[in-house]
Amino acid sequence: MNLLNVQLARYKFIETVAHLLQINLNFKIKAMEQSQHEQRQAAAKDFQQSLGELQHILQENSAEEEIPKLPDDNINDEQFADRTSVIDLAAWEDAVADIEQYLQEKEKADS
Figure 1 (cartoon, rainbow, N blue to C red):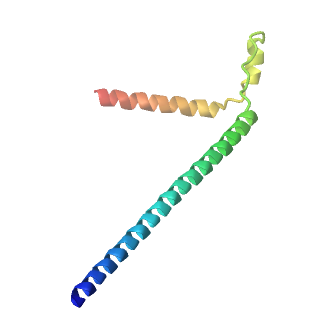
Figure 2 (figure 1 turned 30 degrees about the vertical axis):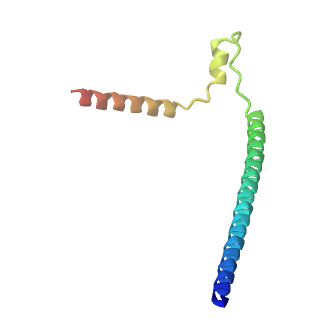
Figure 3 (figure 1 turned 45 degrees about the vertical axis):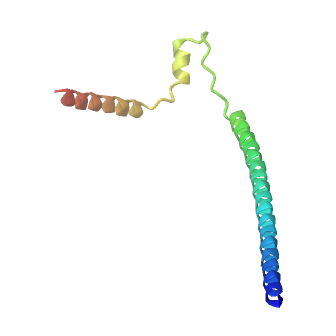
């Protein structure tokens, strides 16, 4: 009878330890889930703040970059030419040369 009581006590001890381990595991899982939830909330808050900063920067840049106005219809050709004389002749020549080269290469490829 004494041996049976010892074995029963061992079984209850092991059962109690297993129960305590399960409680500990459940506690750790719950703490980890809360931590992940808090991390997601913090990340969402940081993301929203970054979006706000980006929007502010874009609004500042768009305010700084004014769209050039088209010339009035009331100006004559000479006035328009004076205003647009910024165009570089060498750039036009380079562009024409590039177009001619492209067309020649296209003709060769089509042949």
